[in-house]
Amino acid sequence: MYEEKKYSINWLKIFVTVIIGFLVIILSVKLVTMIFKSVENTSSSKTMETNLKLMNDVAKSYFTGENLPEKVGDSARVSLQDLVNAGKVSPIKDKNGEECNLEESYIEATRLETEYQLKSYLACKNESDYLNTFMEDAEKLIIIKPETTTTTTVEEKTTTTTTVAPTKVRTTTKVVTTTATYYTVSFNSNGGSFIEPIRVKLGSVPSYPTPVREGYTFVGWYSNGSKFDTTSGIYGDKVLVAKWTK
Image 1 (cartoon, rainbow, N blue to C red):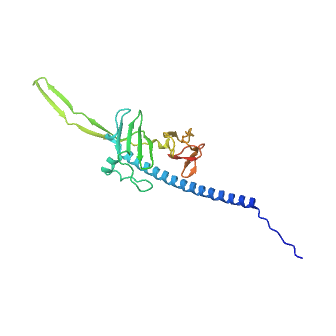
Image 2 (image 1 turned 120 degrees about the horizontal axis):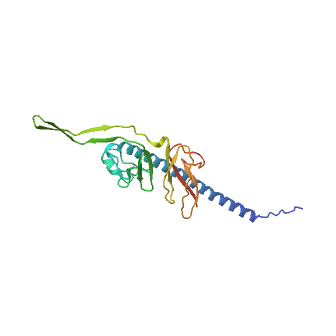
Image 3 (image 1 turned 90 degrees about the vertical axis):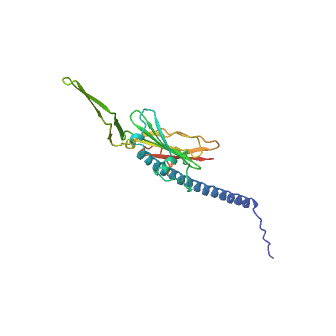
């Protein structure tokens, strides 16, 4: 006599397995999306950083001699359009190969008490940022005004007037940038509130600001795709990118 075997289906186990599989798929998709966004943000940040350094080099070569503002507090600004027209630089493109705004982008020199501040501002289609550096001294042009000398001979009672033609004397002093002592840390808030760049002394640890973005939680500052150590000293110009979670 044969005994009939009965098999029962564990519907609860099947349901739990399906739910777990579904959650694994969702988490995998989110992880891949985060990786792609991180790569994209890193690429964008590096492109912007490279372009700003290019504009800063142009600013250092342009703002010399009579192009520099003379009085403390005065500024001289030149648009990227004027620089392109003058052949100083080619049109700058973003990470997508699109040209940045020629009219809104500019370089600017401001006369301070003992140095000049150079600002390079770049406005592209989906992002904008700027870089500040400082010059302690620069090439200056000194113009000597015409001088008139008068010689009088008493015996002959005649007066001879000699006019010395105006001359230009160019004095050149070495341009010293404070990048050996001070560095600029710029912030790309990545959709959050605007953060002003800060000037940091070599090797010192500054106080880093916290941006705000509605609906998001600030994770931290990142540099070249890796989380930046805010307890380490600064030894070069930095462009930090904010990372968020929703």
